[in-house]
Image (cartoon, rainbow, N blue to C red; front, side):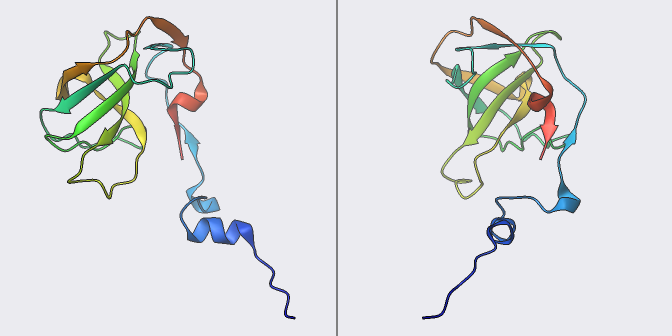
Length: 132
């Protein structure tokens, strides 16, 4: 019986689940020192919003949003006038887009469904602004 050896790291890279060393992550400047969330882990969505316009990301911390897409909002950055929210894009038309959390200006969406109050203040850390 032939024995097969699997290089798991190579397999993960080829499947896109692990970045190549040349694409290793990097720390980006913090957008805020605090965020408002529904829970201490920011794991529950606060609200669902609908994109009013297309938004093209400035860098890897941000997500691309198409007009009309639904966005699940998980956190609202607090320090700078609540200008940026963190969320993930949803929608059947762009459903083949991989789910990814990222930031976007709150001005490009409108709230459609309130889900949970954003009453928990959480300190941001370096991983909140890390690019993979």
